[in-house]
Length: 192
Image 1 (cartoon, rainbow, N blue to C red):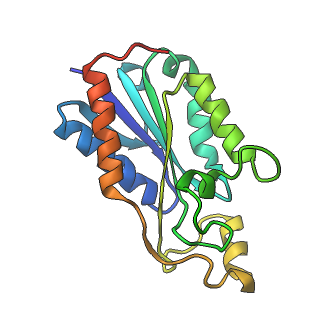
Image 2: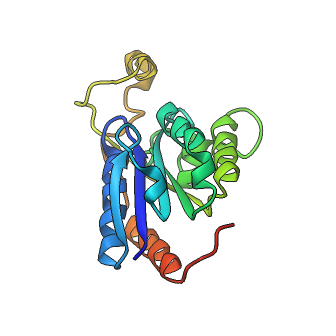
């Protein structure tokens, strides 16, 4: 049986919830899977495949997520890897209205604001990831900011109303993606 490690970097729990859902859906599809944070991931080399995700803030993956991939890149590159990004909020600003989750989270392909997308592409190439899926996130204004940048954004008068409260994660889309991964693993997709 294939053993999948679903690893996540999460600041407020939204990405953790997605990772746990992916692991549960993989298990329902007959693939052994467990979710763990980048901080507690141990025995990485014993997994047969990986799904790695990070929350996205201001267009970039969390540092802990990128560091995890860099630290284990040699091992990850020898096995099937899928990445996911979590974080854009539906309608969070007029600029993101109507954009795909990927465009809203990671910015444009080129030019100003494209650094986050380019970093994810570098990570994908480093570990030969099959895909990076972007999922809408969740925002609870009662959950205190955990980083200086979050504190500053929340203090800015112009930010009021830009971050809509709610859970925008599309569980059916997440489940469908996890089932595709399970099918590919059962079919023994070769490492790129």
